[in-house]
Image (tube, rainbow, N blue to C red; front, side):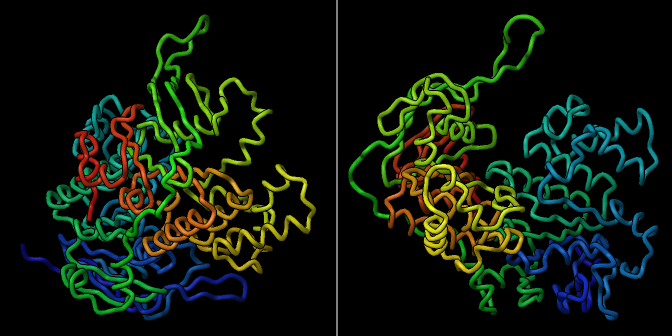
Length: 532
């Protein structure tokens, strides 16, 4: 297939101004994308990938954002930066479309699937009535959304992550664009769903002879989809070329660092003893599916189905499974934040039947680190107050003692204690996750639940956080429960693995056994779906 240049970016510079301060975030970026090819833009958070992509559609917050006078972005013969807004609206969604990273926030929660997809089609193609509805169904069928007709009146929250992403793809491709910008299209998805979405994108790209600009920090996705790659660091492209050259013959030191930043390493050498810190038996959770006006619900969704599980002192239990498998419900139930039947014991003491008001000692000894550090840290509190909050609730320490404990906790996680009077927005994603770990650590807990602690982070930062977690576990003999859909992360830190499917534990065992010799077909499917 003969390919011709479709998009040309020349001497792109992007600056952001706030008052008298100006930040130069993208510096002299040059690349082109040919018709029908996939071009990947990779790099860490803050490298300039996304704002470069957003500038193609002129979606930056102008006039706070600005370009240098020699910046040019050409779609064919059209210079996009020179076009007025009215003309850009005709290009967005028609000639150039975009898939955003998180479909739950990109889709309007107040509108149905039919309304959102129909609006895109009607705007550019003028279809109305039954013809528009049929085209909406055709587009949903094209992206292989199950039961497309039945999903027309569904709202985003009623769809799974993979289904929401399929709707986003349908919206992006409904008008058969010449260029698709895919901004981290699979980051929030489980490995099996991720593979399905990547296969779908590849098939649709071939069907439509469409060019694709892929924004990602996942080299597994880049290997699978991309023809050519550009590597960005601190707003500059440090290397670009054919995918094979970038992966096997990288020139830039930064490129080699990124390629080596896979979730490697192995769990710490833990104690041989098998002291049980926490265990559940015959654990069941059901959610009512109907709410009669009179009487009790008659239909239920079984979220956890007769779970038996033990957590051993000083070791890490990895919990894996697709969205909806029951991982998060299991954690919430362990933490006594979700009603359940069955037995829940902590250090041999039964927690079922104990009132929430009597669980304070338990709450101090069991802490949580959440997936998104920015969402889990209060933007109105300083780091000092965030880390110290648990101490204020659970201890009677003096302000001086609390401050000293905060300083020690920040040192433990590799943060400068001098930063404790700053606010969360002044830190990077990796630093914010260190703050979350420090907040959990300051109470000297026995057990920490880690809910997708690295999924929002770049690969380089992931490695740093995993190393930190291993070091802290060894230093304090901590016990972890790690919930993740990233099997490389699970393998690098877990001593035991529990595989969940539809509310059941379908396979459990030592990490080495699960990864080298999985017994269940579902576990084998998860492992085979992991992109190397």
